[in-house]
Image 1 (cartoon, one colour):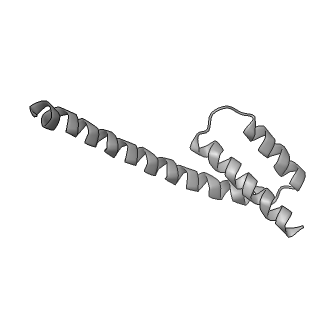
Image 2 (cartoon, helix red, strand yellow):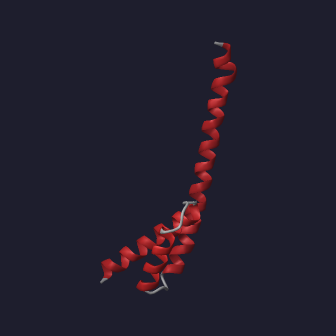
Image 3 (cartoon, helix red, strand yellow):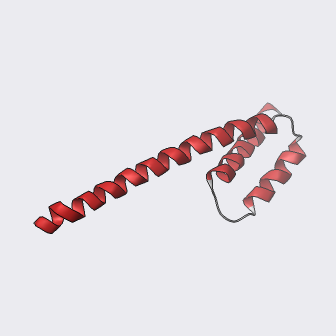
Amino acid sequence: MGFLTDFLIPCIEQVVENTQKSMDEYKESYDEYYETASERYEDMSMEQLQREYRKLKNQSGMDSKRAARTAALGDEIRKRRGED
């Protein structure tokens, strides 16, 4: 039982703590990028929005900045289609 209580459980607790911290940082970063991107995309034409969206979707990887930009673009496109 010593190995479990002395080593394994503290390691698991540290992993949980680190994961929570990473998730919080990702969300904070995502929210900032989303807000900035939303403001930028309001002034673009529908063609520009769709071109930018396709460009982002074809890139590899999905960090918080790219995920937020893609989501903001998609939301702006859907919002405009609803206004038509």
